[in-house]
Length: 509
Image (cartoon, rainbow, N blue to C red; front, top):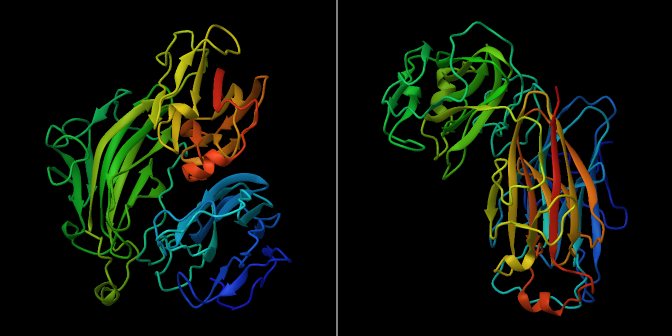
C-alpha cells in the first residue's frame, strides 16, 4: 500500500531515473499514499515515457500478482502499457469520461524471477498537435496502490476498501470484499459416484432437482424456483437466512461418471460478501475456487472445472459466516449495498474434450470446427490468398464500417493436459491503423502489426482446462479521430488485411 511514504522502498521496485514514478497523496485506493506516474507534458509535445517495474525473486513460487490501478490516460494524449518479462500483456485506459475508480489487474506468474513493467507514455504516436480535449476530464497520470502477491493455493481478499491489502496464508481471513473470480482448471481426484452421461445439461426447467441425480448435504437450503433464472424459467437458489447458524453450510452435489476428460460448465449469480457468507466450488472433496459476483449491477458469470475421466462429485457449497466471526462482528460489519445474501445456479453442462484437428478451410466455410464469429465485422473464407489447399480465412479493416472496432474468430479448446496450437499468418497491417492480436481467455498474449509478403508460422502452448482462443483484428487501436487518421501516412504496401490458414491443434496425451 506504499504507506511508508517512500518509493522505491524495497528491492522489488525500480523506476526510471530520468523521469521516476513518485509517492502521491492526491488519489489513493486506501490509506494515505499511492505511487503516480511523472508529469511528462511539454509545449513541444515531445514523446516521453516512464517505467515502473516490480521484480520477483528467484525463490518466488507460482502465484498471482494483484495490482490496483487508476489509469487516467486517453489516446492519443497518453497511454499505459504493461509487459511481463518483456512480452506485451495489455493496455490500460480510462473506460469512461472522468473515471476515478481504481481497477484490479491480475497477472498470473510461473515460479521464479519475473519482471512486470508498466510504461506510461506521453504523446505515444508522436502527433505534431493534439486534437481538442472537449469536455473530457483528462487526468493525464496513472496511480497505483495496494499491490500484493498470492502464491498458488492461497485464497485471500482485501480487508476493506479503506485499508491497505496485505497477503495472508489463511484462506478464511474475515473480509467484506470477495476475492477475484478465477476460472479453475485443476484435474480433481477420483471418488465413487453415480453414473451420468457425458454431454448432459440441466437448466432446472423441471422445477426441481429431478433433471439429474442431484443431492443436498448439510443444511437443506438449496431449492429450485423462478426468482432469477439465467435462461428459461427456473434456477437453483440458496439463501443465507435459510442456514440457521454460523459455520454451517448447504451443499448441492452432482455425481458424474466420464469415459473421457470433460469440462463441467455452469452459470452463477452470487451477490454475496464475506464475512456474511460464501459460495465455493469443490470437486471430489477438494476446494477449487470461491464464486462471487461482486459490485453494483452484478451479472451472471460463467465458471467451471476440467474433470479427468472416471467418477467425480461436483459440489457447490454455500456457507453462513464461514470464518466463524463473533456475532457482534457480523452485526456491526457494514454490508455492501449490492449484497443480497443469496445465490443462484443455472445451465449446468458437461462439455467434451477437444480432439486434435487440422483446419484448412476445405469446407469453404467455418462449419468443420466450432468457430465463433463476433465483433463489428465477420471473418470470411477467401481463395485470393492461401498457404495450402484452396482457401484461407481473412478479415480487413475496411470490413469494419465504424471508425474503430474489432473482428474476432474464436474457438474453445478443452483439454485435461493442454496442447499445442499452430497456424500460418499473412499480415498486411500498420500499427497506427490496425493490429492483429491473439487472446486467450480474455488475456492478450500476442500482438503484431507487420507488412509481410511471406506466410509466417506461429504457435502457442495451450494450458489445461477450457481455453477460448481468439484471433482478433483491431481497427484504429488508438481510437483516433477520423481527421487524424486520414492525415497519417500509410506504407505503400499496406493493405489493412490479414489472412489465416493451416491451423493445427494437437492435444497432449
